[in-house]
Length: 260
Image (cartoon, rainbow, N blue to C red):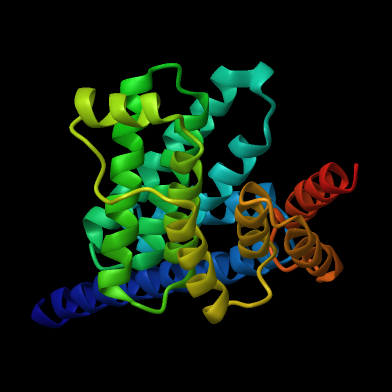
């Protein structure tokens, strides 16, 4: 009898171990497939793989982070005429990113995913106070990333973009931010924006996104020849990220604006 019971227990243990092994293998395979699809710019297909991982393991930080990025890509591409659909995608992206950062506060990629959702949600917000609070949170998250990894290029881009957009506000709008919303965490200037973009480009010199940011500052500063040279370089670079085609379109639009 004892032997029968022992045999039964061993069968149960082996079954559970085998089940866990199959589960782990499936998760690893889905994650690899998702990353491959993402590298091929197949955003929707990659998202499906990441969500399979999350169905099996809801606390998989890397899957949460990449799923958030895919949702942001999908939602970010939708036109403003589909505002509510955009919001649905972006809110889900933010939920995933926040969960990832809660699970691993020192994961810089998860924090960047959160920043991206905040920026995209801010674009569709009609509430000025919400926009300013999002801007302050974006700044804080970017600084936190740099405290984790001082050579994280995307954080420098975020800070450059943050400076550039705020530098385009009128002095009245900036004063309103300071008086009504508790001020801003650092002084605003186009020079500061350029400095951040330059630091990002020093780490990732072939980023179409970073080059567009740098060219945008020079355009605002009236240095159109310099901006044109940078834009032309960005246009000639190969696509490296899912949104690079759209980024090249922005480069072409700004170049045409300068040349006209």
